Figure 1: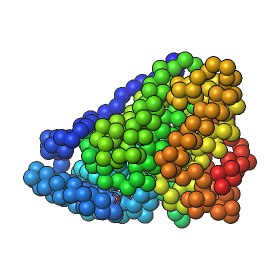
Figure 2 (figure 1 turned 120 degrees about the horizontal axis):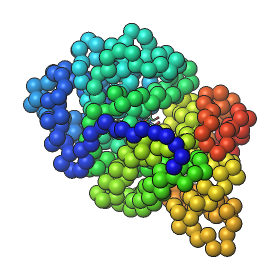
Figure 3 (figure 1 turned 60 degrees about the vertical axis):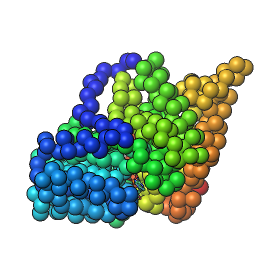
Figure 4 (figure 1 turned 90 degrees about the vertical axis):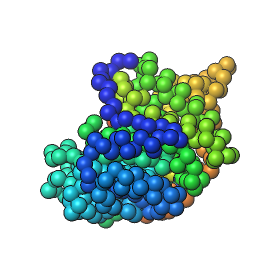
Length: 388
Ligand code: NZQ
Ligand code: ZN
């Protein structure tokens, strides 16, 4: 543990089947004009929308709505939400949905009282909020992103072929999040498994970096073992509450800043996946799945010891008689078999990427420097081509 850091997470969590009952107490602390934000209709179908509007009305709140927040929310949709929030003088935002709805609500929250265009300010110029921030609360319906307990807000601009995440500070993180694993049980299998891989990759992004002996890496190994175990149960029986609850809780801890403390982090799978997403609008977790193995196999020689440790500690492969290189290869092979077991998309061509898009996707890939190998643009192209 060689790094210097501070650790503070301001989001209060309510977890479990009874968790929605805490909403009315939380609402007391916030204003009367609530902006209710949700996606394309799953919350209406499940009945959650009615339950929540009943609670809001019971608390005397005036409700304005932004509906139809799409997966991979767009800059245009963000501008629409800001307008609705202003017209209704919203002083609290309640996000009900998955990572897209929660991310989007955070992006609206920092833009309502700000004159600049939010895309230019936060996603091109990467400025920090310089205006009043509208508080956000979250009722989560999908496990994966960790958005319920972090400051991330990813927005897509289709005209510019860019998908960019801004990680905001403590004051933008949800004030509270309600996590009921039951809500995730209506997810289609494709979304459930995409979410599971998103969780796995968040941990990998923070694990595959650095060479020091680090508490964060031991926590990560435990989270990964638990996730793999629960995922195998959930894929066979999506209604298994125990497995779904473990997946939901792991998602939160995978990306609420804990496991990155005291070390550098990689995040190149996300940079590649986001650029693929900007061109294809594909499901986030699947973009990560498709680029992961080509990327990890490419960088493995530069972080051999960690990849060997991953094989031993996460996949249970015995070190006896095996070199680090053999172990590292077997670890990635074990991950590949698990990914296939889950039915994940393993190639970007299966997400709609064509040869003609590769150069543009490479241009849109932000190259980060915290992992075992800093990629050149040519290497980005090579990794993308290996995923076709
Ligand atoms: O729109 P509705 O009808 O609600 O349907 C959604 C959507 O189609 C559906 N869904 C959600 N909960 C459901 C459900 N369907 C049935 N039953 C339920 N209980 O699932 C679909 C996907 O939802 P979405 O919110 O898009 O998924 P996810 O949670 O994976 O969020 C993806 C977004 O989060 C960003 C991604 O880039 C992407 O834009 N990320 C945010 C991060 C963060 N805040 O730190 C980090 C991540 O790496 C990620 O980049
Ligand atoms: Zn992710």
